[in-house]
Length: 269
Image 1: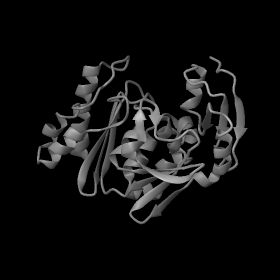
Image 2 (image 1 turned 90 degrees about the vertical axis):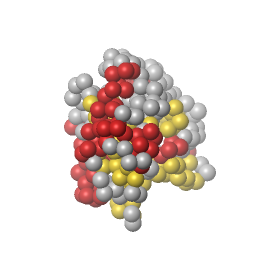
Image 3 (image 1 turned 30 degrees about the vertical axis):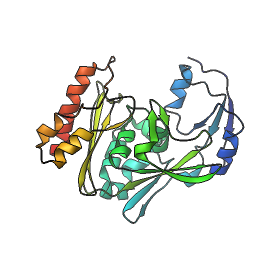
Image 4 (image 1 turned 60 degrees about the vertical axis):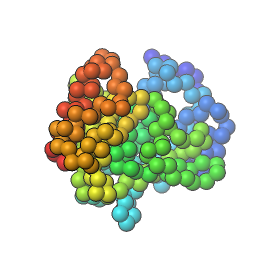
């Protein structure tokens, strides 16, 4: 399959990328390319200009900042999985990165690209939501911080403006966190995924592939706060969700699978 015709520009800095994005209303940012390029080949996405930010090394880092760990948007999955700070203080993020795709994907795919793509089946999207992470974007009007709860606005849609570039993700340090997912085959997208973590003394639960966007399992969290057992709280996993039906499983199957995975994640947590 061949994508529609497009122009290509390589950005040398974030400011350069912002300027290039302003030249074309149908421009798209290219990072690792593992989400955008397949969509272009299927002609689901038809950008007329690709702005390649893959060589902006300033966006590739992991650093501790008080009670947070800040991850650069161009950090590759393999670097996130191996980083000692994340493995110690926010292990749910490192463990999830370790389970993404295959070694080729992990060596090229980026955490920022995965999040900005806004795929409700993406592992990192439900994790940033469960952890109440903050996403930092830079655009022509300067820098702003977006709460994860406000970032995912629809299927494959985010709060980023057309000329904004995601620069970093700020994760809280969490003492305990678990990410579980079920896939039909190794390296497939998650049929259902569950992120469970203790954040500021409360248990947060995020859901993957249970609606048009990543979701917080609010009913589960409320049940836990009221003293419910893990099994009882997990029975509420599908409340407020709208699980899709496709070749990976029916809507009812996903709803049941979410209950099973939430119970397991809470027990492991």
